[in-house]
Length: 64
Image 1: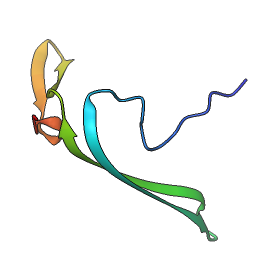
Image 2 (image 1 turned 180 degrees about the horizontal axis):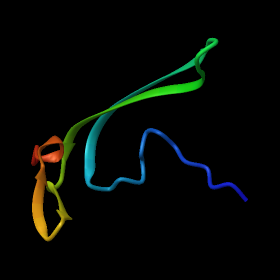
Image 3 (image 1 turned 90 degrees about the vertical axis):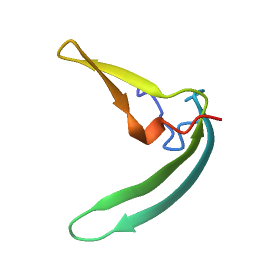
Image 4 (image 1 turned 60 degrees about the vertical axis):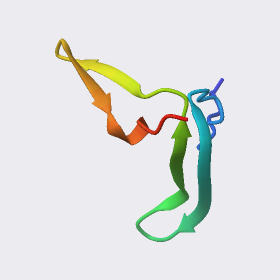
């Protein structure tokens, strides 16, 4: 069975405030949904590990 995903990412508990828009596009080049998710406020910044280096994701650094 295919897992259904939602582009508004409501399951992201770290994100406290977000803005979300969606539009359907049907052209020769592309057919499907286009979405934009704007993260406005988060509970804590997101830190990820790449090649044994800890990096801070600035996109999610707005603390409440």
